Image 1 (cartoon, rainbow, N blue to C red):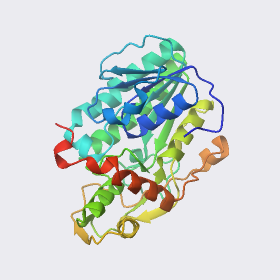
Image 2: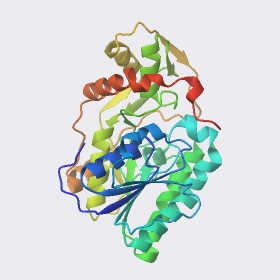
Image 3: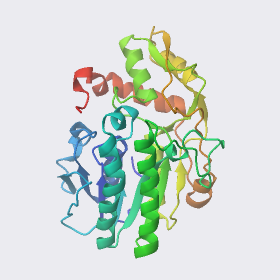
Amino acid sequence: MATSSSPRWEHAVVTGGAGFVGSHLCATLLDEGVAVTCVDDFSTGRRENISALLDRPEFTLLEANVSEPFHIDRPADLVLHFASPASPADYLRLPLHTLEVGSLGTRNALAVAHRSGARFVLASTSEVYGDPQEHPQNERYWGNVNPVGPRSVYDEAKRFGEALTTAEASAHGTDTAIVRLFNTYGPRMRGYDGRAVPTFIRQALAGEPLTVTGDGRQTRSLCYVDDTVRGILATAAHTMRGPVNLGNPAEITMLDLARWIVELTDSRSEIRFIERPTDDPAVRCPDITLARDKLQWEPTVQAEEGLRRTIAWFRGQGATESPATRLPR
């Protein structure tokens, strides 16, 4: 997928580049003529996500834990910091690693950007809003986050990363930006990562009951990965610091999503209600006024089309994942 603008960068560093969103960023940048260094320790990323890129001459893989200082062999003019466990299944089994990547990892990625004079973009999340008391959420809302709950390792790591990025820009003049991503979905998600879309698709294709938490009335706003990548690169190409929300303002309940996926997969699966996780947000919906006004960005892939593409991917290579291939502790 290419963006509408011609490349303005020569070399981009993508931390977490073998992850779901990171791998799409790597591929898009390469398609636009940008050399890419992917930095990943494969704690949650997968080699198969970047297997098609390994033979491309402008692609470099650096296997490293960004929580430790890392060195890039050539100057970069863009650093995209996307390294972090991002799903509940991942950050609950890797709590300390999640906190380290959000703090030490962010600091090390900022150091790479500062040394090169590069534009730096931090991947933050709608989770900084917690279980919001303001709806929809705009960038001026400070959030409602439990700092000691089970989700805190991810929520607070991202909140600290935002604070560190802001301090770096103020103290050292580093050119930084922050994007807050809302519920991105699409090909290359892992069926066992605990997020709703891949979980429901995997269960529907296997003929298993779709496990909806609580009563299913909690909402999410789903943004297809191509739209998310386009918004990230639009932010990178702009001068704004953010934070800026990138997501789809169309809400859907988890029960309706489960029923829709059953229909789109022609599955005979039933719906099964299970216990709702602690601190699970009741609503999630971005106010994207800032992105529309400053970046001229908004989602263009309709939910049905995005879900059909994702289901098609899972029917192919995505369906090969099994519980035995879940990432280790």
